[in-house]
Image (cartoon, rainbow, N blue to C red; front, side, top):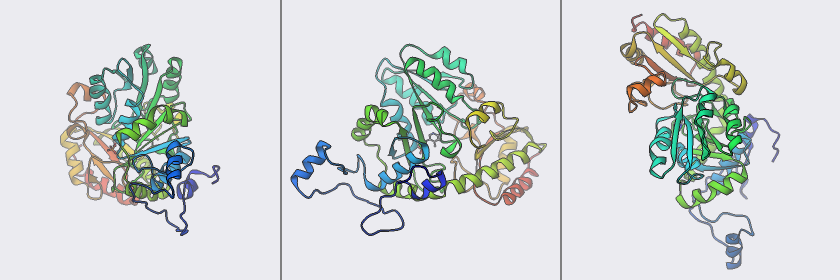
Length: 394
Ligand SMILES: *Cc1c(COP(=O)(O)O)cnc(C)c1O
């Protein structure tokens, strides 16, 4: 299998394990276990003397194809597919920590990610400091001798702030801590955290990787050494494994990932520029625009803009609701990364559990909307917004 293919080719052919039937499309192996020719071959498999699968909680052929394909895309040595994005995030963080250790995390995190580091980890004696991740000096100030994990998302949900991944990795390396990056918002095509010095990358495959609203999934990618030292046993014995059916769905989904992400990002860039000109809009945040507050970091670490756009309406919650309700093609949903364009009002949905103060810190107001662009025709989406804006007072 050539490792020199470009991403679009890897995503169609990489990691394929063809059976004796020579099928074109990857096979689904919906099996819990595997049989052995002889007692001796079972013994050898369990001793690790021969390669092969043992039990689907540890690994199975369809999951293996998905994991290999993701490794080729991400430039990682090893990957494990998990049942959901949260199984990937929680596992990647907790597997390497023990009581007395310390986490530094950016405060702008997906809600459940924030709960894992802020609420769950302390129950096990693992302390966490949340910082405004936009500024490196905040990470530096929060580091302690017992800091073992630095965790971040970039761009963040929903206001698309970015974190200097190479800068955080440099700080982590000084004290031997591991940087875990939730790369969902950037997608594997627009940002490669391992190349920037991060140690572990996690995805909710539920988002762009499936991209068609069907199944939950996650993936943890890192070096062979990190997986073997930290994740392997955690994964085998706590059981966050992905169903082979979902692995197959995701394996087929990634074939079209570059086509979908390309169109989603083109739509996002056009809508961001259009919305920036509208009188009802106070602010547009889009990592592909020159007026992004951290355009220098975007240029340094991202290979593309984003499939998401954050909007701030002058008229607050009433205007945000009026716009959402007047849209026709764009659907109201808290999901993202889908082929269908989706719009979210974070303050009353995804971020409703935060205090007013915590929301304000993250730049989320009543007028904030998060748009996840789909793959629809750009002009239809622009017309949908132009028409819907007529229902929003300036
Ligand atoms: C959705 C999401 C998750 C959680 O993924 P699930 O597949 O829903 O468990 C984690 N991080 C980010 C940034 C997400 O958008």
